[in-house]
Length: 431
Image (cartoon, rainbow, N blue to C red):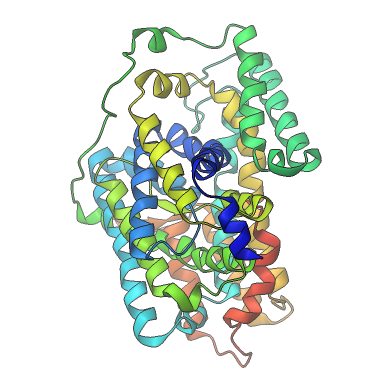
């Protein structure tokens, strides 16, 4: 059955299917650079390069597409403001090495190591913080301000009309669309919101007119500053364990055990090398995209070569300068409306991890870990000095892990087979 499906996706069908996969991932892919101030053309380039690196590392056995990770949005914004773009890229390069180190430990001790270090009571609240911590950014943008509310970019009334229209379109497509269209709610929201904004004079196309058709993306070389590196390293914790869920999810779709072959250590290594490689060009960290996993489930396109073509198309689009300039004309209220749903969904995924793993919040140990992590993250707790400190996702990751290690626990650890029940309901969620 599976072999006949793979034969169906051969030749020119592979090319078209690859384009379709990029289309599915595209909305989330470009949102991260647009929010963080990175170049969307560079993000397209590094998504393609990262996917090819992942395929090389995993011997082209896993049909996944790698692109911009939402877990790093708040840390990137803070790091760029504090240490600059080049230092942030150096810190992200080192964050990719965290994956490499985890891959080495998994190769030696087995995948169960990650679940002993990062059980659901740790990963659930960390992922919730990623979404809830970004809620003010989405709301500010929806109201026509910058993400940090330092300036008003559009009148409140116009911004609210456009943002709520974009949010409504995203909600309708996510809940009512059928088939492959249900996987592109972000693109639908952008299209509707952009059209409304353009009709109200909120779109300036001067940059598109002044851009050449073909040009190298604005690559940024990394610099290495210890304070930025120490701040960024703990951020890799949440997406690393989320990666395990993505590998299980795509395995459940294709009917293969990728934890065993090519091995979780290889998939983690692929993610890490892709993230480090992206930083060498000025792109955001890479992660496996669940939207694409959902598309694989619907289309039965199990051949990993499909993702090779998706990567090739992404790299090609990166050099079309007018396309990159057009992406940067998307008004902030359009993105803000969509991000209200997207960031809320991330928080929902974290909550779902706790529920599906049956984490008993009546037990004081679990309550202490979750409560402390959430308040530290949402309250803006910072620990350290003026030159270097931990806060946000970085601090939450360290605190949750330490509490889990030092507090006594008589409960059994959730293993990979039990986590399968968690990720089955997460296949269609974005990052």
